[in-house]
Each structure stands twice: as C-alpha cells, then as structure tokens.
Image (spheres, rainbow, N blue to C red):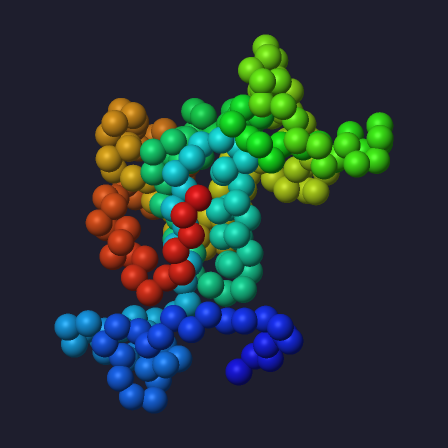
Amino acid sequence: MANIPQGFIIPDFGPRPGATGAGAASGATGASSGGGVPAYSGPRKMAFICSKGNLDMAYPALIMGNAALAEGVEVHIFFTFWGLDIVNKKTNKNLKFTMAGNTAMHMPDFGRIKPGLEHWSIPQNMGNLPGMTAFATRYMKNEMAKLEIPDIPEFLDLLQDSGAHMYACKLTFDMMKLLAADLHPGVEGVITAGDFIGISEGAQIVFV
C-alpha cells in the first residue's frame, strides 16, 4: 500500500455495490457487482469525454490521455458535441481561445510590467473587442509551443501512434452532417453514447 503523506485524507466511499468479503472495503476487482454480475477486473483504463471545441478545452484530455498512456494505462477518448471539432480535420487546425466568459484569464507576461499584474484577471469586456480572440489564440499557441507541446492535429497523431482509442459521437456526427473522411484517421469509429458506456466499463472517467 502506498505511503499517505501526513495530513492527507483519502475519503472513504464505502464498499463497492454488491461487493462482499475481505476485498469489499478496498474495492478489489473481481468482486460481484449488483445483480450478481462480476465486477470489472481487466487492465486499468481511463475514459475521457471531450465535449467542448475551444483550444483551451481541447488540450486537457489530450495531455492527460498522453500521460496515462505513458504509464501503461489503456486510454479511450469520446468526442461529442463541440468536442467533435477536435477530431474534425476541417476545424482542428483553427480551434480558438477566447477571454469572453473566462474569469481566470490572466497573462504571466504582465508581471514584467509590474510585479503582481501577472495574477490580474483581464476584464471580460475586453474579450469582446475586435481581434481579441485572434490575439488570445495566438498568445496561447505561442506559450504552448515554448513548452514544446504539439498543435492539435500533431497531438492526435501522437495519441494514435501511442495506442489511444478515439471515437466520434454518432448523434453529433449526424447532427453536424459530417463524413467519415472529415475525421482524423486515429478515430476508430462513430459510436453511440451507449456504446461508449459499454467500452468505458471499469474506467476512470474524466469529463472535459
């Protein structure tokens, strides 16, 4: 069992539904789940649901998915609603970042002007000025490039080569009237939400 740092508290979520015996409290795999059906006991896996197509909302799942793959975790990513823009070859090169509606927007470079300004939240109405979305997008891309983080299409290539399983939401795919040729080649299929629920059984689920 891993050593727990002093003062760090792990919540007790209780036994898994239907689990019995010595492994019940720890949530051991292989225990019986509700209805007598064996609980998931396969390899560790993570399932990411990408629902937004903004540049700053595209990166979290891709970065975490890449990190999980590096740790040997099986990774599944489901792109739904505007998140489908991330794997749409016609849009994923031009995802945008906006200040509007983002109260956490601040710029570290402002600290060069006056110490402390790097923590100043930029007023929301500035995001509505002409050219500000383009400026914010360019700024974010430059900062990511400094950290050697690839752009979205290249990141998808990386995930594909590393073994990530990626899927497009059928409802969104039909609603946006897309073609299979529009999708990044790493997308393994166009599936329903119910299909993904089955695929993600036993996975840690991260909704973005």
